[in-house]
Image (cartoon, rainbow, N blue to C red; front, side, top):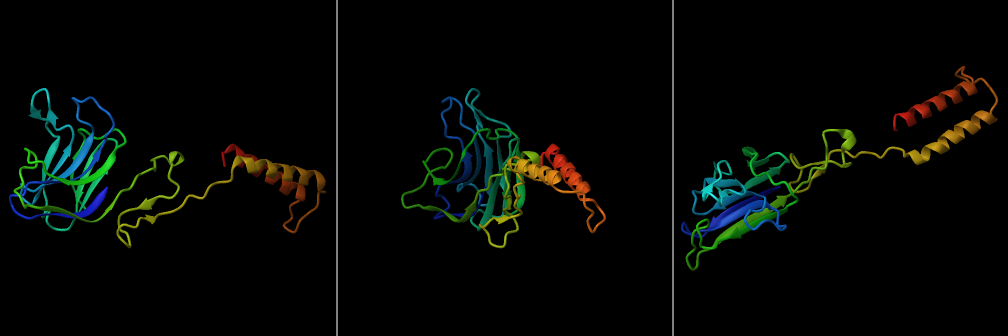
Amino acid sequence: MRARARVLPSSETAGACAGLFTYDDTEHDPNIKPPESDMEVLTHDPETIIRITNQPDFNRTTGELVPGAQTKVTIDSWRQWSVHRLDWFSYLSRSWYNGQALVDKTYGVPHMASSFIMNMWSDGGFWTKDMSVGDEVYLAVEWFMMGYNASDDQPANNLCTKPCKLDGLKEVGKPERIYEVVPQTSFSSMPSTLTTATSSAAASSSTTTTDGLKEVDKRERIDELVTTMLRSGW
């Protein structure tokens, strides 16, 4: 998931939160925060700071923050147009800023199907701080992309027959196909090949061809080839 965006508060005191994150909104134990992986801008932070968090970041039992759940990362400025990116693997979440890897997290990695959300909000609370009457904060978005990886380290297990790339594109926002897997001949078409070869062998006489091989020899080689193909799962 990636987006080119910037945050523009109308004043230094306008408290709000801009977020780019995954969220599992299915039903959960009300005492346990749902899986969530966040990249957030808090306008009361310096413009060079963004927060990377995997939830839950707060221990309701001890009343303390969970070590390693949240990281404050230094960037150029969230007021500038920048590309924010979140990679979600089964074993870690990785955050990027303008092509530079910021932080890897293995704690709280989402483990269920989730929604992708971008939002801009404020409730006057501890997290966002307050906004005065007349204050405004804008989350400007030029584009966003989201890609799902259906490939596998083992080619035989691959689900994706038309893999694409999201980096180094001729035009941002338009994924480019790397290659396309051409379906192989199905088993259902093979028996007719075998039948044809067998019928031909029974009907033809043993004649010599221009390459010096007898027709019967060629037919035997064809039968051997087809048998080998079937055994190999072609």
